Image (cartoon, rainbow, N blue to C red; front, side, top):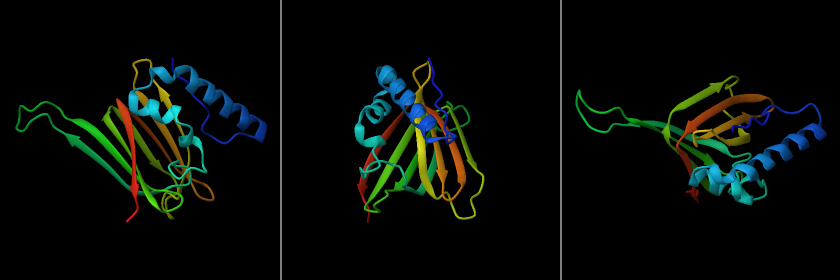
Length: 164
C-alpha cells in the first residue's frame, strides 16, 4: 500500500498538524516494509527533528550527481543502473549531508523559480511502494516554492561528514 501525504502547505495550522500526524502514523505502520537505508531514516527521531544538525530541513544544495554504471563495456554490455547522489550543506553549515539513491528507476527534478538557486530544503516525504521501493519527494523553497523533486529507488543511504 502506498501513501500520499500532501506535500503542499495546508490551508491552516490544524490541517497541517493533521497531515503530519497521518504521515507519521503511516511511517510507524509501514516502517518494516522500507528497505534498510530508508527504514533507518523513517525510524530515527533525528531525521524529522529540525533541532538536530543531521536533519535535512533548511539544508542547502551543494551538488547533485546522476551516474549510470554499466554492467560491462562494449556494444553488447548489459544496461546500467542509475545512482543519484545528493550533497547538502547542513543548516548549521558545519557538516555535509549526503543521500545516495541506488538503482534509481524514476526521477523528476523540477525547478520552477531558480533565479536564486534552490534555496533551502523545506520538507520531504518518504514512502514505500507495493514492490518495496522507496519514493522520496523533496520540496525546496525560499520566500516561495522553488523546486520539487521525486525519486524512486531500491534504497537511499544517508551519511554525513564535517564540512571542510
